[in-house]
Image 1: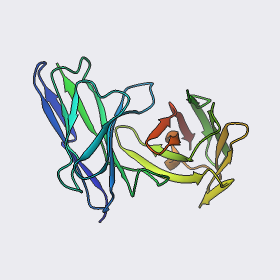
Image 2: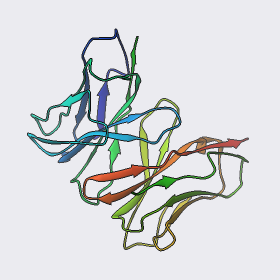
Image 3: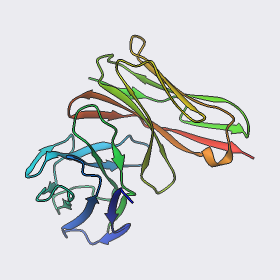
Length: 113
Length: 111
């Protein structure tokens, strides 16, 4: 089955700890994205990557970091510098950045206390 | 600056009704518009993608239209079913690397 997997589904961390969220796709897509979803708000773009070893900041990149060492993998690290890290995080991919459908993973709910 | 709105925020209809969900955007210069469905606590499922040169797309009981000049898209759901209950989001691609999402419409179909 082709698709996007995110793990874990739920993640709990103490304030001050860095945490890494996993995103893997087997769709052979070049472009990958990380979004954050908060109650009552639309999705907001954190980072995106259009090709291996390249990534760009989105609208709310502060306190986050990413890597793209393999085409199929785009992990997101939530650092202790992120002021309000508790949220629902969604990974997505598309064939390229331009004009194609985005496909989403099932999401990771991160709770930081 | 592109803004995307969806009205109403919530909608409740009896099973079997046809219904229309609305998506409005402020800048007509778009690449495409995509409709998604999101079930509680889940990721987004793509429903329909309309390119800027297209007027509508259809998939099963779903039909999405796009009117760039008025900054509007509608998602028409025919013969609604309880399984259609979910939040529906629209997303507007404004440049090669920018997608703006609306806040969504929460749909409840009552058996």
